[in-house]
Length: 285
Ligand SMILES: O=C(O)c1cc(=O)[nH]c(=O)n1[C@@H]1O[C@H](COP(=O)(O)O)[C@@H](O)[C@H]1O
Image 1 (cartoon, rainbow, N blue to C red):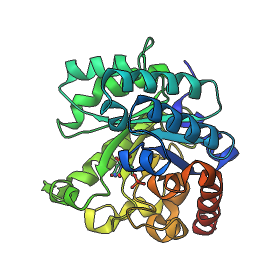
Image 2 (cartoon, rainbow, N blue to C red):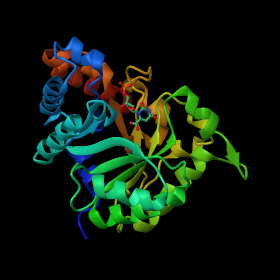
Image 3 (cartoon, protein in one colour):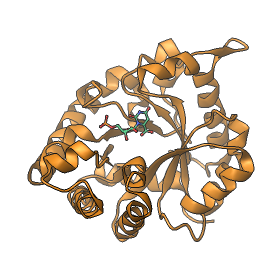
């Protein structure tokens, strides 16, 4: 068996800490960086973010939509970025939020996580709203390949609550996804591995209790479910408040920032990432 994603994540946390830099080449940011809103601008932006991330953080999260908006040429840029990132120590979480019926998920698996995937990455974000079971083969295939999957459970946007707080048999949808992941991680993670390979996306902007997720804050000792937490910075959550937001589970959290560091521009990016790391150190202290 290859090294599991959970093991790679634990190593990355130990070496580089828990900050993740999102690669979100918004049109407005390309303009702000003095770049054209075209594939050349896109590639310059993406490469510059990758270069600043290397050896500063352990994880990057390219937002696929900003490549997709440039069509097939944008996808070529994403493929090249992925290939460059694979030569570094960075873990790459592709934020594509895929979700479909099982057989279609198999094709997404091939595209992002499979043996010949054109978009090389370590993990993928997926949506469970066609039923958690629709992800079954994606999860088992990922385990075989040492890949990770992050499943949307409680998202950072305010509109998510109307769906994710809905209850089925007294349990919120968000909680049932969290519990399914915890169960799979407990069964599939080897020995006393610190992390399982299947994470939950929990927005940092949320009150976890109001989603029925108060139990998350107690943390998990072994085979813990990794938490991908966007919502810091531009969406209002503060890195310095990580422990208040996530309690004991703060040590399981990948803290993701995009606009709040990217808006520093190419010349200010390294410094902005260092400042975010300093803020996070307070939050985890
Ligand atoms: O899966 C995600 O990363 C995600 C989940 C979520 O609940 N909220 C959320 O903002 N995201 C993504 O995280 C990034 C947040 O960007 P900033 O708000 O600029 O830091 C975007 O790429 C979003 O698509």
